[in-house]
Image (cartoon, rainbow, N blue to C red; front, side, top):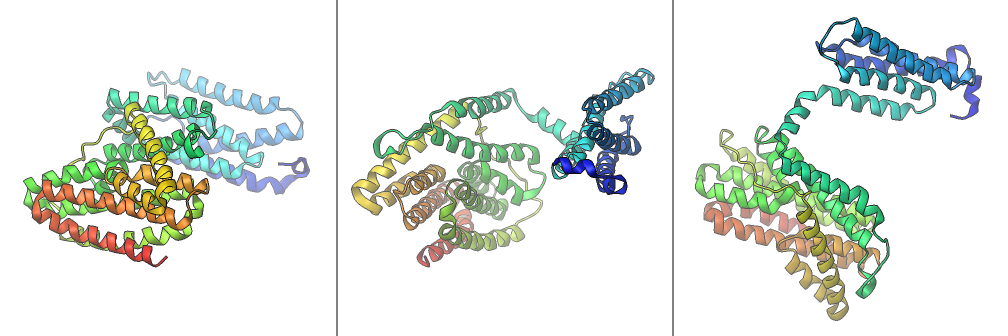
Length: 418
């Protein structure tokens, strides 16, 4: 806030104090429900208002020490309260929440209201979902934790120091950009993997297919094709999960394209959206037909943040990128489409990111980029249908074929309409 706020006098400061009061009540409401918390609605509300008051006085008197003194006073109050309570539980979560509440109150006065409100909502959610967070942490294996640490190191330490410069044939290889693509895909997959472990099989096929598709639609297809053959009664359920997982790949392509090359969205979005719509109709039909009591199975996926998975995708991305640029130079758009057809069989992300990268470099136009991505997706869809047919049998393949055909027809309609 500019120095003009020094002229605020009396009632004009009321909105800031009302906002602080609301933030304190929001956080205090959650703490009030917790029997072990020694501070509730009134305490949190008063601490937030005290934070705003301390910031006001600090500004008026041009003395930042008043704001610090207010923080120390809150801390001393907390210490005194716990000394006199004779309780073995230190209640550190409530202590930190009170100190944060004071800081949020101060932020309100310094014209950071939106950020303060967002943080207050986030803090309240973090406090409220304690059982879920504890259950999630207990589900994580040592291998998962090591993988997440590896991902964090490679994202926040290695990525910033990689050279952001073009190398190699066609100037297509940029170490920083290449690893940024690895981080993007691994991050999306990691989010799906995490959600899959938390959700488990409790919330039915739609969510299982959604999160399974975020991690790996191929792995999800593989596991449900096997179980669909072993148990014919779950044929509709397996088909529903498989189709939904493949639809999530379309959503991933939308997100990745918007982040990496937003200029492709006007032509790419209709192609993907029509395929998504047609597929959703069939997935909804399969879900309504399936037996709700049928047992669900969790897809057997590995943590996508593991080092070997990330490095493997990085190498695949670079190889596809060079192959795409080379074939485009040698054989024109037909060579590009051949690479898309072959690489898309097992991995859509690599050819998608490669095409988007070449689009940004001006080596592919919008139509070529959209066509290459569509061919790669349809190629991947064909590969997964082959898995279903050979592993799941004709009955399951029949159910899945309706969904896959609807998706393919939708995409082809959108593609030829360009």
